[in-house]
Amino acid sequence: MHFWEKYLTIKTLNPILPVLVNVALYYLFSFLPRRGLYMLVHIGFLPVKWSLKIVGWFLRLILIRVVYRLLKFLVLRLYYKLFPRKLPEINLTVGQIDKMGSTSGKWFEEYIASLYRAMGHQAQTTTEMRANGTLPKAIMKQRGCGDQGVDVVVDVINKNQEKERIIVQCKHYSQNVGNSAIQEIVGAMKMYKGDLAVVVTNQYFTESAINLAKENNVVLIDRNRLPKLIDSAVKKKLKAVA
Image (tube, rainbow, N blue to C red; front, side):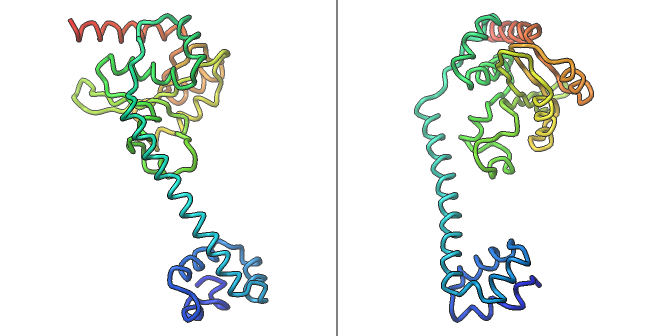
C-alpha cells in the first residue's frame, strides 16, 4: 500500500471524481515524495478542487505529448513518401566528402548508408527508421530525436547465410574523433541488437579513442580507410550492373 492511501484513497474519492481522474491521481501521487505528499494531503494543503486542476494539467500534458509524437511520425512518413531521397554519388574522394558533408549534418549519414546499399546490404539511416517506425521500441519511446549515437543500421547476410546487424556512427568532423563516439556506439549495441559496431569519420581518431575501440571490438574507419570502403562499394555496384 502506498503511504498516501492511508489518508486519500480511490474509494473515498469515487463519489467525487470520475474514474479516469481517480486513476490519474493514483499514478500522480505514486510519484510524489512521501514528505511532500504528507504536507499536501494529510495536513489538507491540497483541496479536492486543486487535485482536479493538477490532474487536468497532468492529463493535458500526456495528451499533448501523444498527439505531438503521432503528428511527427505521420509528417515524416508523408515527407519520405512524397520526396524520396536520391542516392548520392558514391564515387567521391575524401576531399569532396569534406566539402559536401559540411553543408548538411545528415548528408554524411546518407552517404555512408548508400555505400553499404551499393555493396548489396540493407541499410537505413536512423532518421528513415524513425519515419517508418522500424527503430527499436525503447528508442521510439524516448523524448526528442535521440538515436543513442547510431546513424546507420546495416543488415548483412554472412557466409553462413545468417543475418547480422552492423550499427554505424558517422562523424563528419573538422577535427579528430574522441572517446565519446566509441562510448556511445558501445552503449547502443544491446538496444539495437547489433553484432558489430563501426564508427566512420572523414578525419582521424585520437589515440585514446583507438585504444578504447580495441578494448570493445569497435571497427574504426578513418580518412585513410574510407577510400577503401568507397572502392569496395563502387566495385560491387559496377559488378551488379555489368
